[in-house]
Length: 185
Length: 176
Image (cartoon, rainbow over all chains, first blue to last red; front, side, top):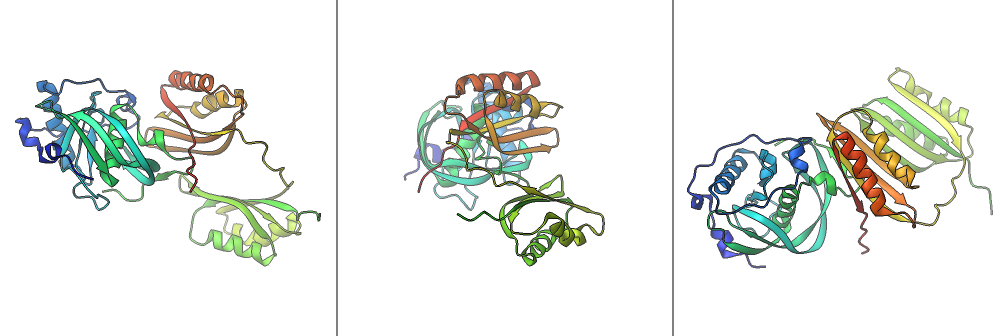
């Protein structure tokens, strides 16, 4: 697998605005079950939202991704950074995608997931471990198609689900796949 | 064909502590009983176990053998004889239903009523209350002729009335 150099080279500094740390909303807030609106990636509001998502992710322990719905905005924007996670294989560092959609998904693997918006539960979810995603970078609006694997692929599917109004709870493998959280980061 | 050994349904409920399963199953083994299906979980921190065991022992004798478990008053044990169940009927399709939203009375009853109305059989169920969030995950066998889109619409309508969300997905089993 090869990482996309445009996405890998991207950093929130390109946004040119200071990100603000926002409050993360928790289920059952209805915004988490609302499909986000498509955004204009070059709109200053989108650029500020992108910076805010990265800033909020950075201050949240263990956070590897954050979607706009999780800060109360039903818009199809999310950030991801799995670079420090032990289950990561290849990765693109920190990036934000707008209007992202899955183009190809294969090689399902089941693993236990948590979510900042569902702090007391974890769940076993089957996700593709090889993924092709298309979206736009905020600021320039550059169209990118990136291939992700392993943990980055899982994080992308989790975040794209958020922007579609779905939580991992909507994807758990069965009635015995929900667990009370034992450790909090 | 020989008559199958009598089947006993045992429940153990109450305050959780290490060793409840070890003690229960040890006493059943001492009676020569064979454990069949069992399930155990913690429900808001309370120990909850159900198990079926087979063997030619009277229910009263099993109850007497398990009586020490209840001695300090923190656990309740029941023993009932149950008939051997028929083998499962022809398999329909398996589905997973997830419902989540703000806690309020009646979420489970009104959603599962829609499942029952189409002859759907719930084969596994977990509900959890975590803060304000109420979550239901059910595995459902639907009859082969079930109208799945109609059920999905009925479940979504019931969920919408309650201000919660519902998802119905087919169970995928990857044969390896």
